[in-house]
Image (cartoon, helix red, strand yellow):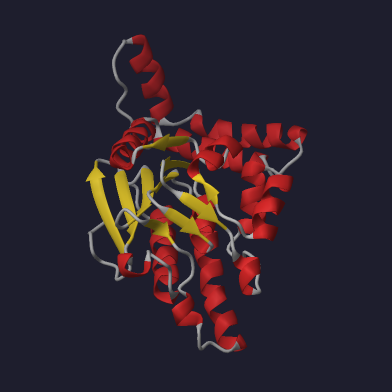
Amino acid sequence: MKPNQYDTLLVESVSDYISVVTLNRPEVSNAFNTKMACELYELFEALGSNDAHVRCIVVTGAGDRAFCAGADLKERREMNDEEWTQQHSEIERMVRAIKDCPIPVVGAINGAAFGGGCEIACLLDFLYAAETARFALPETSLGIIPGAGGTQTLPRAVGEKRAKEVILSGQPFTAAQALEWGLVNKLLPLNQLMPATIEVARMIASNAPIAVKQAKRSIHGGLQMALSDGLAFELESYYPTVPTRDRREGILAFNEKRKPKFEGR
């Protein structure tokens, strides 16, 4: 994967098996326009289906002010209803591509994550955030509702009542509140955010990639089911790991007291 192949994203390989995706429109606080939505869709579709060399993805924003300020409202200013709906269909494709990506995706939330930016963050597998980051879903103050997954992903992260408070009031909340409520996993000073996120990405990437993907699949899918169905779904995810070379290598390396060399096979 080559850096700078996108107009609104910066995609870089920072080490073996780890790619950093930077939302790269700092002049507008990394707000996503139609182009960025399309490019995120294309990127995550490609990563999910073709790129065996990526085992973990980190998503962050350019600069130190914003992760993503949400949809670019200047672009939307002159849209009629049909154009608005057509653009939103591109956003919907982006949401599905990020949600369905089989590779672990970790957020490094470096600043404001408002509106659609908060919704993108909620789609990721887990989040590390700068202590100065802020979050909000202010759509009801604009005459719409969160439409990039926010009414579904935020309640799953923080609970129904907290999500209703946030979404119906439109009021922002701090990184400390996001940590307390369970949306964010860890808070860090801004200058430590990317090193810490890359370090956990290295841990993920060092594990057996088929097992990691199957574990992610099992967790996400099982949470949509009753417990008994989820347990059955877990077994559907477990058994494909048994015949892999990585499973044999993992057990052999453990017994030989050495670091395993996983191949993703």
